[in-house]
Length: 405
Image (cartoon, rainbow, N blue to C red):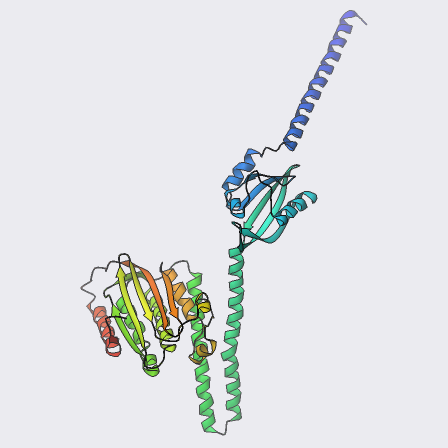
């Protein structure tokens, strides 16, 4: 081998060795960087950015359970950076995620803000993001669970309430068949069937009204509404009930007040309050309806001098199918849906309903609604104006006006 060939061979060997050493050094550097990254307690910037944008409670914890980073919502559960993860169920979930080599999920109840009286149902998931870090996400599902339970209760209660009149109609029909030769008994049972059918129709109608109020995001027929006309219509529909019960109705307060909304829904809401006030008032007592207009708000109060509502029932009185006095409600034909309709109708109009009551002294339901200025009068609408005036005059004949209602 000549000298030039030996020199070229040595050069080639040197290049191979140099390249190999360079690759080895680069691999070692990358390996060291990877190990350093895996063993570092520094939370990656991407994870920190995600935590900052999350609405759910979330945090990153190390293998010892120390909290390294949190989302804003995590503090509501007492999870703070630099502190250990204190909840034993969450610690167990993190250990489970690490032992299973990926993630673990579980539903549990956690206290919020350190208040043991405020347990929240959460869905928690622990996911390993590095050999020494675990991402813990805590989603509060309390409200969703409450809504699901309300739907289940609604279906169960509706089935039960519908079963009662349907069963009664069936039994009465059988009774008529058995008493076919007795005209007096047939008339008696036929009257009972008519009453049960009426109750069934009222119940299904109110279920449909409540379902529409809960399903729709906005009112379908919104326009300026005169409170005077709404109350006149609602009062006129319950004059016979008041006369039969021997209850006097007094209407007082401000006049010429307007709101924006659906007049039919408002008539139904006030009608429910008036019907309840009459049904729970003793003979010879008075039901008062008062209107008070303040800047931007109008309050319409319906007061009775009846039996009142016990303190334990007040918080639930607006629930569907809830009856403070079960026996009395059924005797008067109540469905247990009237006040729930009042609540949802008021909320749909951007208002609220308040209750004051004392057992033995009576109750006052007050609806507060946003007030608007009276719209300009349209001279060409004389026909409708006269119709409204006749309706108000007719109601005034049947209802005594009072200054203090």
